[in-house]
Length: 358
Image (tube, rainbow, N blue to C red; front, side, top):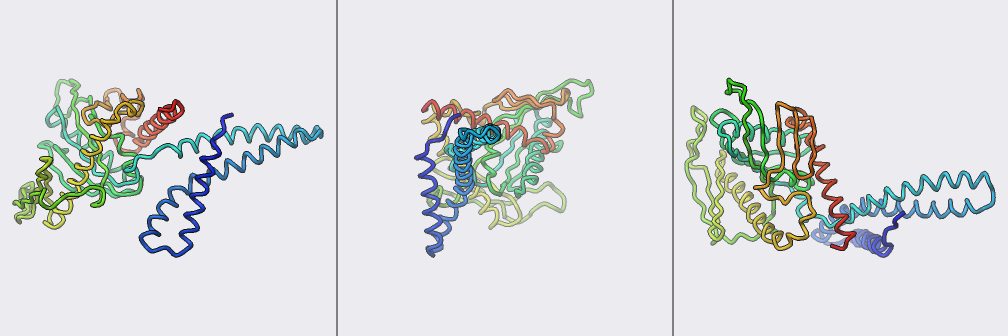
């Protein structure tokens, strides 16, 4: 049975106690917010550490009892020791996972971008299916989905759709969805029953605040233009669409909802996310070797998953996971099973790397 390093657990409990003391000492509002955030992050970990230490103490007591010479008590003690050893092993594994370094963006909300790839109308329909899958999954998690920009496909679905998914821990789960998703199915327009292969690209970016990334006013150009609606009486005839160009990077973002003020806020939100993402990609390429053990690279060009409708099969190529649950996954109901498997695989890879001292 592997025991956890006592010094690390001691340091964790000391830090938790010092935060608790500082919070009860009437700090200023800004310090209180910072302390309470750290307190809530450490709380589940410290609770597990205290449970682990109580189990170790109980085990030591049971071991003493087993040596007492009383046969009946010894039998009870041995029985208890077996259960306690299992509990300690399970708790130590949970604590190891909690001690893994966290992605700084994990707790953030996210910008979700779905774009139709190869396959024409069928690719746009598939992009629509994917977006609805994420929308339903997000709603089941208690997250809020707000469409920021959408370009509809000629036969339905979307050529491109960008949405803000807000809530606690959104990026931690949705980040595994970045990459190329491939679909194999017979389109409704196909009379000969031939299976077509189409693709859509998904990008998930953490939503970032002004403090996370600086955008200087002189580095952006803001243009307003007339928004083009879908026709009929719903065409937005005001000059409300906003296009923001970030001059140093060449990134261009547009937003064409009803309010010009909201469009500007939306476009800035997407621009911040894309600039932050670009910054992170540069940093991650510098530590590419250490990322090899992680599940997927987050590379948008990486083919990550195939949805085969004739066989009712979904295969995630990064972890060779195949589930014959396509209807439940594409409706968002069973998407969590795929995401949870990816998280578990990534944690296992991180634990292995940590144990090897990588």
